[in-house]
Length: 238
Image 1: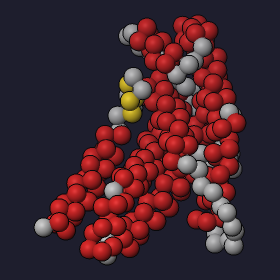
Image 2 (image 1 turned 90 degrees about the horizontal axis):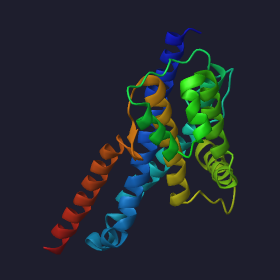
Image 3 (image 1 turned 180 degrees about the vertical axis):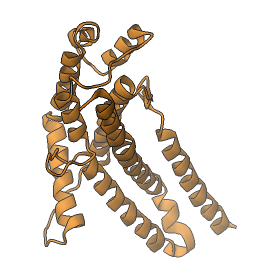
Image 4 (image 1 turned 90 degrees about the vertical axis):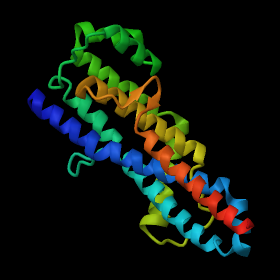
């Protein structure tokens, strides 16, 4: 592929795939937490008449969160490629000779951002001497992060609950979903990978100093949920 074709594929993978799934997963995840934070107030509303309503919302959000996270961390498949984290990293490595060249006015700022992701200084220095090798080591760095035991265990739980509860209706017992904390760490990994590759090769800033810009939309939705429950509670108390 030419550099322009590779950039087009990267852009499609990130903008039409990963950014969308991160938003879906994050929105569902944080709305679930917002509802959970008000469970006592919801239980008290009209002697529990609102419980069924919010339970239905919770089930829909849980499905959305699990499926969106699962799509984010699908395995790379060359026959049926999907817009997932592993496919993105594979593309960066396999097309390392054809990636857009990195031109930055302030390479020092870029070095600081890469260091914040615990990328080795030796790898960062390759920006000046061998951008092909840099891309390969960048991909390997993120792949190694996803190979950590705690990450693999969370991904296995995620795959199991998706397959046995959401994709199929199997008769299973004691099926344990990943904790909210573990899912949040998976989201953070996805944001950092998208942030780094998006900035390096698409000149698009998704993150800055560890902050994922698009999370502000999710925060607004959570504030709206908080406000809704508080208004329902105040009406009930009148």
